[in-house]
Image 1: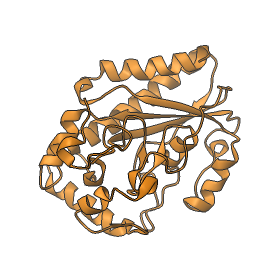
Image 2: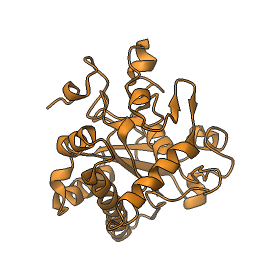
Image 3: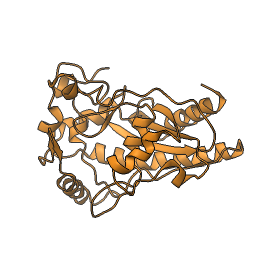
Image 4: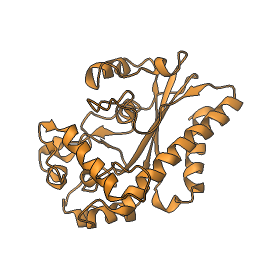
Amino acid sequence: MNKLSKLIVGEIEGSIKSSPHSSWYRGPVIGFADAHDPSFAQLKKLVGPNHLTPQDLLPQARTVMAFFIPFSDEIIVANQNTPFVAREWALAYIETNQLMGDICMRLFKVLNFEGVGCAWEKPTHNFDETNLISYWSHKHVAYICGLGSFGLHHMLITPKGCAGRIGSMVIDTHITPSPKVGLYQYCGYYQDGSCRWCIEACPTGALGENRFDRHRCYKQLLEVDRFYPDLDLCDVCGKCAVGPCALGVYTLPLSASSCLRK
């Protein structure tokens, strides 16, 4: 890593460690991509025609950085063992969104001091409320930045799993890109067809081998928000994200209780 990438990694790691909820997290996964990587332009076809490019966020963009904050074993187990979405999971969603916003603001100040410009999109609720398509898909951006591969559940699986939150930032200075992972390399279903855990865990039937009903999924998320009226907006579920790939790359056995690797 060069000086700038070390600075960014250090600030992200430091922010997580100094968080009042630091015990909720494991160490982050961080990667970089060339802002002119053709893959970003392809997101207008893969995600939606209104998906932004790095240059839309920052005209002089040269690098895109993405980071994944993985949840702890305890947060994951709580959502496994609760019939409905666990309160701990909902709280982790709320607080981690806030933490990611704080991280981006902290990076903005630190990078600005170094003469480096940057821009970012908020971690969530940056989507069209009619078609539920994101204007800046952090998980697709993170894939291009080399953080991991996609799973049958349409989430990104990193070397530290899929249970967590993803943020990203556009920077006007060059940082060496991280190597990409195969598109479905970390998913058991796409490896050999042996895992359908996320489909079976989905409480709404929104997930299928060849489909994802985002509206049915979102209806469940809003129901969770109504279930916890004392919390801030918590349109979250995560039942598909607490299986064999929750804490790392898919491995056998498939039982939820044995998928957590210390």
